[in-house]
Image (cartoon, rainbow, N blue to C red):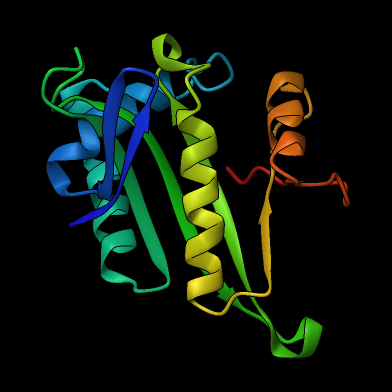
Length: 168
């Protein structure tokens, strides 16, 4: 299901809902990340938990796992070059407002700087409006200073300190 098309510089991309065959390329994008490389693995023998996660995400209408692929003639034709996960969270705070949580945004290193990440986030914010969300939120590792500047350029503010508790 194609959700959007982006024309950036001399390249064209389409954003679409992920399908099971995208699990491998999504894992590869995440595993190439410097902070996740030691934990994630795209090896076929380690895909079972990722496929199970994909099915859980895909079955829940509150979640939308997206991929971006290059279009014909753009060098990355048919290849998954970016991904993000959107989760719509109904809540009691803010008069029962729904929030959009954006997670796991990854763009292939070779395509950074084209505006693809910005186009993806802009589309996600528009989708949040379309679905009646009152707030869009995301977290970014404290060490990702370039990502922080990127999100600030898109209008996000650092309003909270995030905390995580790793469970065994």
